[in-house]
Length: 247
Image (tube, rainbow, N blue to C red; front, side, top):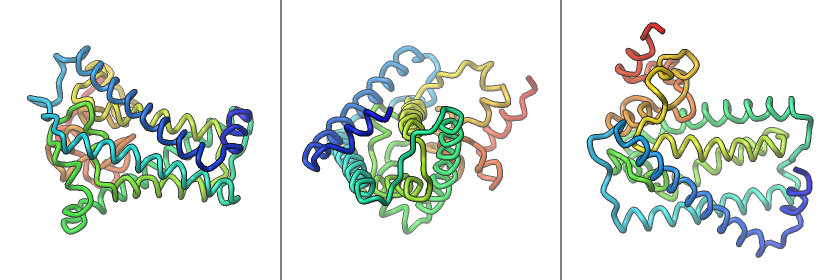
């Protein structure tokens, strides 16, 4: 892991900008391909009656989102080089702990900011763009207002600034974030019905869970988990009913 980060650190600014752009395009392509494959293999388990139509405007927004994500990566690299962000290389138990810490921090922060951007005035400026997708298509994850991309990026950078995190934990989190974004916006439920009744799985933000937020924006503000919706009473009534199914 350390040689990889040494390579990151030794890049020139121009090389890092290029790497950030290419890697974020690669992540987007992987996510879009994953959404398409999930939609194909689980086409009989759709969350919505019909997929969201693909438009040129959405494609432009998605490309813009990729470039903004690259900009966040560049900002993080400069903060790291300047000594504001500290990356560590501990043993694996600490890496697991750091991964859990980062997931919990980001999950809580994303729930809070998601509630904030649903304020009517802020929603109109920032979040309405994403909610033009009342159902899903493979690029829905990337159909975002640039301000929203900056907001998420700033939240992640705040975690890196506040905590001395394991290098592996940061990469694991980024992988899980892409996976959960892909699952949440695939428009199909990939978890078997029996799994959805298990106590642990009921705490996870599934495709159905996030799909209900797009269908009814008053509920299900969580991303990785349903924990904060349960605590603050914003879990959709159907999600709550399902959570009470006896195993």
